[in-house]
Image (cartoon, rainbow, N blue to C red; front, side):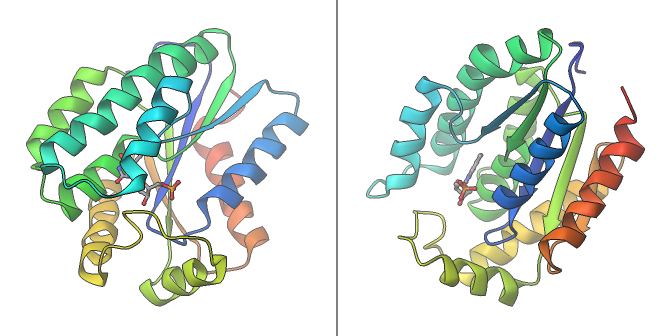
Length: 209
Ligand code: TMP
């Protein structure tokens, strides 16, 4: 679906999977190999989308799941238009910490927003990652890493264990349904082993494109 000349890579996974660390290491590796690369994240990435991120993560509001889904897609529409498409058009590689699979996993599988409704939003968005790395950790490992971080939990992190189980199940189902785009990496290991698998996935799926 992507018609631009750059390459678009997303990282996905439940809480405490180590996405932020792995995004940083991949961006470093791509930059070291001389590629122009943009690091970004969701929800957020562009100024308009970052405003929506604050709203979405702050808590204190109980939106209907479909409304919450559309807020994520509103943020995403701005992010794609203002940052991702222009970067890809300028032949940059884009590495994004979470993208639309998070909406399917968290709002679809987790909050019950309706998967066909979300699938339709994905279709309307009109852009798909070239490669999605799904970092998978056992529940206990994810929770322990989250606690270690020690910062204030956001709205989603505060949801119960059953919610997070559904989210993990969602990511597994997404990866199984789209093996051409998604690679599942066992992220319970040390940082460098996980990074080596990420690099391997990028090489084998995207080559020197
Ligand atoms: P982060 O912790 O990776 O920065 O992500 C922020 C939270 O937002 C995380 O708990 C997952 C959640 N989220 C959704 O619920 N739906 C989405 O579409 C995205 C991008 C994130």
